[in-house]
Amino acid sequence: MFPDVLDERSVRMYVDNAADWMVIHWGASLEAAFQPLLHLLIAIEGFLLWMPWYVIIFLIAGLAFLATRNWKLPIGVSILMFMIGAAGYWEESNQTIALMLASTITALVVGVPVGVAMALSRPVRSIMRPLLDVMQTLPPFVYLIPGVMLLGPGKVPALLATVIYAVPPVIRLTDVGIRNVDSDVVEAVSAYGASGWQKLWHAQLPLALPTIMAGINQTMMMALSMVVIASMIGAGGLGYQVLQGIGRLEVSRGLFAGLAIVALAIIFDRIAQSYGRRLQSQLHMDEG
Amino acid sequence: MTPKIVCRNVYKCFGPNSAEAIRMARDGQSQSEILKQTKSVLALNDISLEIGAGETFVIMGLSGSGKSTLIRHFNRLVDPTTGQVIVDDTDITTMDRKELRTFRRHKISMVFQNFGLLPHRTVLKNVGYGLLMQGRTRKEQDEAAAHWISRVGLSGYEHHYPAQLSGGMKQRVGLARALASDSEILLMDEAFSALDPLIRTEMQEQLIELQAQLNKTIVFITHDPDEAMLLGNHIAILRDGTVQQIGTPNDILENSVNDYVRKFVQNVNLNRLREARPASIPA
Image (cartoon, rainbow over all chains, first blue to last red; front, side, top):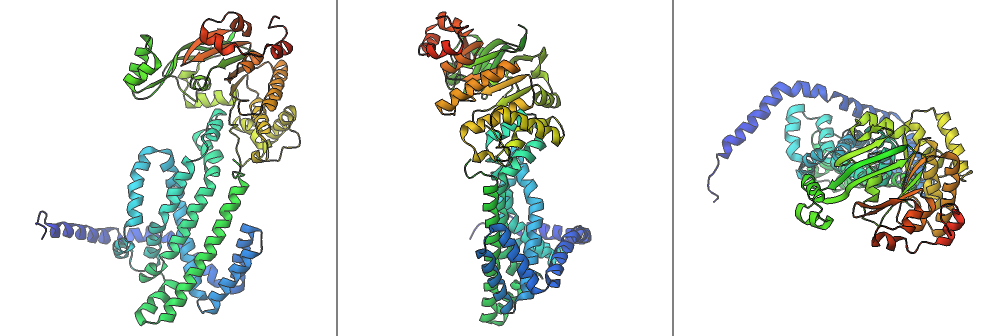
């Protein structure tokens, strides 16, 4: 037995009481604050479900074509999307795509500026590093509990949990990308009188873009891997089918929904990767 | 000749204990002794020099002599630890950030050893960058850029990207960018050192030709004595952060102040020099 050095029950009671206090006093205003996120998610979901299925397939194939300028990827992507639809998961897939897109957009809006701040400021970096480590290792269920208490079960805490889980790569890779920008180029831009913002816009961000794109790709993949957990608090979509498969011990339901998640992951990974490669060659950095 | 750039007792120290390092340097201690005792690198040790308007002033030294650090003092990419850098009677070390930006945009431009071109912008946009910083209209930028691109012999490459060009062509872009901003002072940090010997000769001749028409104040850094003798009206030889000798090419050849300078210039190709500058080098 470990000796009783601390009255841990009373410490925990303080934490729980603090959480209760926050729920009572802040719950409503927090819910209002995150309303825009809900609108974003609902707008994307509404758009995807309002469009006829063939238009969606055409749009995704079009994205794939723009990324590669080649017919192979668009055809592969269309076949995968068609199979998802044929398996009976069209609506659920679109809900999952909407959650993934909304959380990726949120992660970008938050993550890129934070990554830039980390790259440019040593104090910010020393604060953010351990915080990112915690975000990446803390089991998502831990922050789901207060999230659900504060916001109630539903799409918003699911989205927030997904963002917390998925935002670290885009922050880290923005930081790394900016710090690895060729210092000769940054120095040259300064020598011609660029201000801090101009340095960022003219040299650092554009040259870091391929690395940031790799971060966006990872963020999308991590957002997709959160869908099962997110569905436990009301995100719906493919994750919910997996969850139901577990609940009813229906192997087929879980397996097919799981395969559909894998298919989505492949589709978006390949598209994002091709965009990354395209950016790289557009920057002509392959030769230095 | 009125001095364009004046350096007065410039010391530059990298490391934790610059005050102590400079005190030791004033006592005449060596760079390695200072490093051992203060863990600080004394890159420049009491540099004082004057650069005249319209001349080409060459700073020559081996790597680690402090020459790249010194040239970065003239546009304050590096700040001196102590000392003054005076350009056109203004001490630039006292300028605030905004004044410094204005100074860099209008007064001084720079060519880099590794070109420092923006890889995602075309040759035209790279050359126009200084003018963009000056706040000129897009039309003015593009017109001036096109003019200077043709002056350095790159017509037809306006819409290429830097990665599509050879080293020599990239450096012509760097030179055109520096000339396009129409500044009075041109800093060239080992500008031709990364180029093949043939291209380097070509670029040197082009620079001499351009300078005959433009009459800029050029500060040129090199480790190559031939290049220094060919281009410089005055040459300063730097070693371990101290000036060994300043003088005309002829001075340095004929009246070397010490063995280090003598060794440095003993292999200069005098034939090429006489051919290129018959007036300044007696037979």
